[in-house]
Structures are given as C-alpha cells and as structure tokens.
Length: 218
Image 1 (cartoon, rainbow, N blue to C red):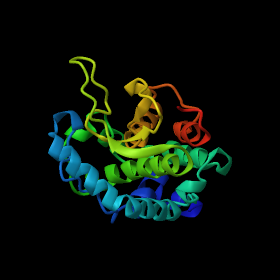
Image 2: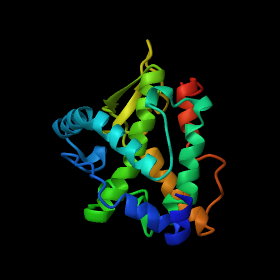
Image 3: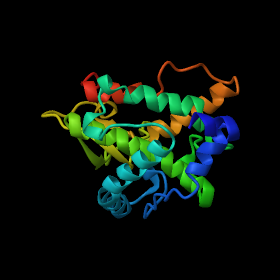
Image 4: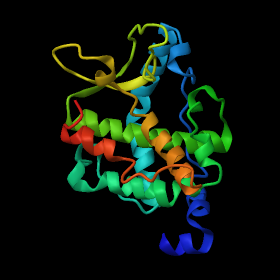
C-alpha cells in the first residue's frame, strides 16, 4: 500500500480501490425529518436487510486500503480500530478529490449518483460498522428516531436510522439516539477542512467508537 501511495498518491490510490464500491440504495434517500412514517419504516427494513452485507463490504474495502479491522464485536478501544480509521480519514480519505464536499452537512438531502454515491456509501458504511460495534458490545439497537420534537427543537437523528440506547427509563433524546451512520461522513468533511487550513485538528475523529464500545457514552 505504501508503494502504491507513493506512485499514485494516497487519494488517487484510494479512489481506485473504491471505484467499484456498491452504493447504498435507500428506498427513500432524504433527511428523515421530511419522510412519512411509512417511508421511515421502509428505510429501516431495507437497512436491517443489508447491514451485515454492508459491514462485510466495508471491511473488505478497508483491507484493500491496507487497514485491517476486527469484526465489530471486537472493535473496542484496546483493538486500536478507532485510531486506524482516523488515520485513514486524515491521511487518505480527505485527499480523494471532492470527497470532503460530498460529505458536506446537507449530504442526505443532496441527490448523488455514480462516483459520489460510491464514496458517500463507503463513509456511511464506516458508520454502520461502528454502529454494529456498539450494538454487539453494549446495550444499543438499530431503530428510527420517531420522537415528536417541538418545532425549532428537532434533532439531526429525527426520522433517520440510528442506534438507540436500550435503558429501563426514557432519558433525554439527545442521550438516547445517536446518528452513528453520519459520524464518519462528518469526520471526512472535517478532515478535508483541516487539510485546507479551515478547521482545528482532531486528535481522533473516530473516538466516538471507543466511547460507545467502552460504555463511556450512555
């Protein structure tokens, strides 16, 4: 991988590896706040059907990029997985031409296809991998955030496929639902801004994975 990066550049080589990456094909690919109850349910049903295959796909692509990660059930802090994923985002993913812009905050409401869909799906699948790590190691589950928030007080989790902390009481929604699929998308966007000198450097943009698997979150 080091030789290939030297010959082609980290970003160009990563794009070659991801050239045939299969995109996520949500039945209703929009921000969840705009979706009906039926459309949200369709997205969740689709997700639960494909999530294991997406984890297999993304771990295979990571291996092709020279990043070996364990199964989600073993992706705890001691495994060093979060550090390796952050290093990939920092040293490689943000150098793929236009990837940071593809991962801009409006990514769910922006129609994508072809190359953009493949790259965005890879970032989302990193989130699925991290979510599965939380589900398999701690008391989380995949769900839809159907909370009826007050106008002007909506959370980014609203209507989206998220992980939910399973607890015997109902804490504040901000503590209960985590938009884990979006986390790596925003990390790539932030790392691109850092590369351009427009943001502050992260120590570890994937530290949320350690927080979830260790129990520090929730």
